[in-house]
Image 1 (tube, helix red, strand yellow):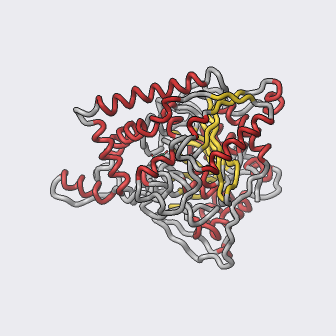
Image 2: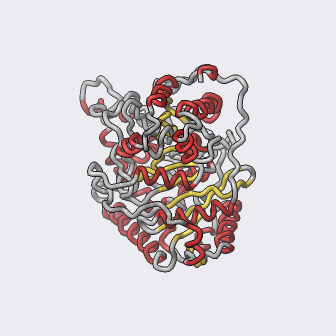
Image 3: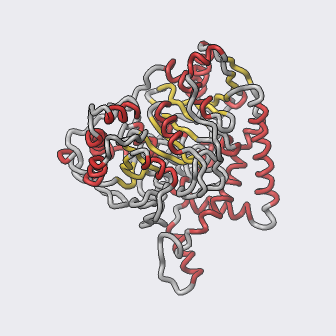
Length: 502
Ligand code: GLN
């Protein structure tokens, strides 16, 4: 087992092992564990990956030299299908790489496969994937969270060293919490969205998932930066790398804001306990704690389900049977669009399009969309005021422990509440991360740290402190079958090799 990405890269550079040996280590785990966890939608055949690993030049200066990475299936990689876990995109091969992928390639990363997700990133459990449900590596009867559940499960079960997800309302942090890994939602505008299939353009950000903070800092640094292909990215960004941490913290202790009022009602006991245990560690370490009020946060879910669906309904208009994906031979255009969208989109996608179209329709636009925009500004203002008094805010990541497969899938409102603590951060465009903190009843529970815009370095510093004080986090103990399954085929042209081949 490798402890960190820098171990992999320095090991390759110092010739302790080769990129092929690193690939074999991870691919071997995939061939033994993927059948249980089902984190991927498509996997690159082993032989092709081996050729890539062989062709990596050892003098390559890349920060991710030979590091196996998994990518959520709503981010474009040339040569891989992008499905967004939807039937409407059965065979879309993007003609270009997302900007984040270009950055990773330049640093020598190897793309292992595309990970499972809720269809078009609508969901909190990965059960909305139209292919299969990914399972939580800590307990295979439970969900991995969502919508980036495949990426979180792949990292958690150590089938890859790093993964990319996307977060519109919590889709990186919540599955990271459920799967016991680190997940980061960067400041809006830090990372390019070019090549990410848009859900809600004013909220979406791509971000890293990893087993520790150090690896997420590295991956975020690689994918950050201004991109002429995305006009919302920011030029001259402050670095996300924390200044040499711990000495600094003693000389200039940071203040952490928390709001007990937000924990009342609907939050599981284990989550509340974990949260206060984390605060206690901060206090012992010399951090200052300060109670703050965030009175408008309780409207976050309502605002999100108006603005998020409004933007999604408009973004998803492009799936019309002409430009992308599913086709239908019909006599009229109307019939064709109806057939393609009716058959191609799953139930949650249809629900969101209906809600969003309604919120934007004339007669209702002022009452819903405009009002939600105003309340969004009030939520932003809550954070703005709090950050005049504190350096970062600590909240739980999810109000729930990882729940049982099927336990919320019939009740959309219950499912929507899983993002209570993550959604307001997207509405305000702030950076936030999940740090796995505890195992309760064998299930991971995380805490969330939220920072000022472009102050990822500060939350990383706080998280590194907690990570060190917390001690090593127990990985999932998935018992491994003796005889690997000879061949698994998923939606795309993916094949797993026999173990002997690896
Ligand atoms: N679970 C939330 C939703 O269903 C957030 C999804 C996301 O961040 N992509 O909208």
